[in-house]
Image (cartoon, rainbow, N blue to C red):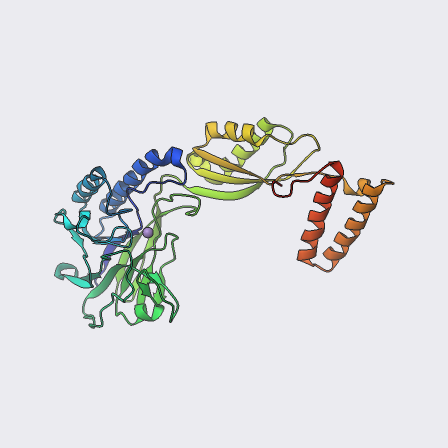
Length: 379
Ligand SMILES: [Mn+2]
């Protein structure tokens, strides 16, 4: 059986402003371009037949001349045939880079669904391109595919439920199932999906190959592998330069900034290995501190920033209190704590999660109010 090898990437967004972390914007734009170059290099190393770029190669039609020239130069080095499907960010327009001459090995889908027959590979590559921000109609054709060939499709698609409208070329599983395609290389959703199946049609979103903010978390990359009638062996290949990561860390040592710093760095090194310094972190610090020993988040963040590429701290530490001892005090505070502890105990016995939360919070805030006024908004 004829097998072909492909690299499927999507949503690269070259030229993106990366405005969510402005101080890193310039550097990240360069890194994004280098990531694209690594994609092309990988396609050569893996000797793929086809390099499929599903939508939003560029962040906009107004992308700088330098970026367009670099992309063309990189693609000239590609040994694979390249297929680009413009999406809602980089749609085809009169001033778009897509109307310029591109290297000979690059095919750009300019509008309605068209097909390119590759006799030597016994493969047909279908594709369509956006011509504006929105595409409300279906770009799939009703024309039946020729089952003698391996039929692929590269397209921007917003996978929606039956009857749901989308401004971004809504497609349903039924559309995929009835398309007759062996594989549909999708773009639009920046979070990767597994390679999925609708009837005989396989499809996937590889997600963006480089995150651009804390809304694009974790490892990013592309799909590489072979496709054949009735199957595939596509595998995810991570190749992002840096990740955006957000998670809680429970600190044991909260008495000094240096101790906390060491604990956090050790934790990150264990979790992410040698390259742990390279990532963007949003860390939610949990744990308890002794009264009067609250950590300075600004100082801790400053220390960590010397090591880590980017770090943002969220202070979720709480003051450790010996409630049992307080409950025994013969004063109003003692009565309050004793009463709340009883309520909390009852809530725990009934496994009433909502009540447990309310009682815990009431204890915490109530105790603070004994010390003076409580700023609930800033808390
Ligand atoms: Mn996109």
